[in-house]
Length: 239
Image (cartoon, rainbow, N blue to C red; front, side):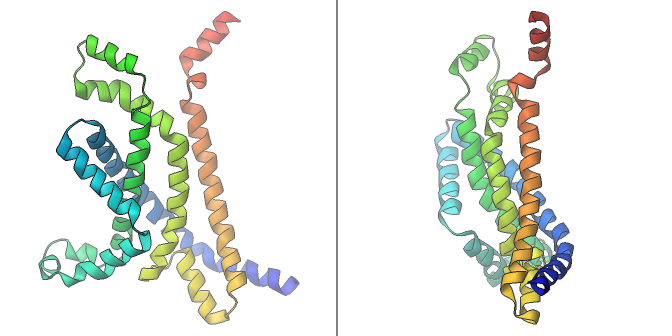
């Protein structure tokens, strides 16, 4: 038993260098996917049929197919097009890191779009009608009323998507990226002890996601109406 614990500790130390790459993949994909998801959500709620149909098709496509298949199609499939190999995009798309980021971003954007859309439609109609009565344009109404409230409401669901994306970076190991899971697979091929190695990798992912959960909960407390400055002043003046 002591030897197994010692071996797991050694594997834990060995897998730690893969954390920066895991975090880079997750952070870049979450940022890019969040921006694209916001655009798709606005397309869903803008009321224009063409944009709404495009957004629905995109969301159905990327939510309905496995992420691993999307990674393979981008990494192995794009190289089959001569026009793409001769374009300015090829120096990026020939690298597994950019292919993984592209696949992860496109995938999470579909889920984020539905999260944001669900948050936007929960904004009270009375506030929207009041904004229209005040003469606000649609763009200004979205920027000052709809989007700020929608972003606050989406934090719990978006936190789950962030955690899923951190775990989804493990699939990047299938296209030769040496993040935590890639280093774990390499260690297993040398030691033939998959249980201990993957247990050490699981501890690392558990720690990363625990930090993510703490950060998201902190954001929820900071952005909740109860924690606003106005609310605190009213409470102090009342009591």
